[in-house]
Length: 169
Image (cartoon, rainbow, N blue to C red; front, side):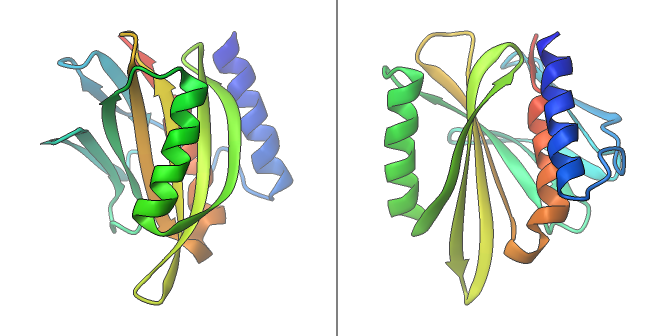
């Protein structure tokens, strides 16, 4: 039921911005049996396991203009305390300015999405983080996404749909 409500809210938001919620379909599946989760993404994107530090996997558009990394991190903080620390650290490390911080439900879990604006090589980028508590206490899945700032209205709805498809197995 919560997934239906989340999808309806995303569809409503997309409609407000003039984006067709059905302009893309999430028909490809990515399952990470080692870490116990699955996610859906558009069939014209690709996914791959990427065991690099805290990075577990990548999901990218075919032209690599947009995508997200799936990460897992550990912290002994509550979700809200972790979010506040994450924002401060992300702004500092990425030299980015926060745009928004929103609460949402993903896979029946309290989660957050946080957006930032950053400049890299004289180009502006829209950076987006989805933070979802894992089954284990003190662990969080983080989806870090980035897209050229001018493409955010076209790509963010796709990233939102991908993130909201997350399920723990």
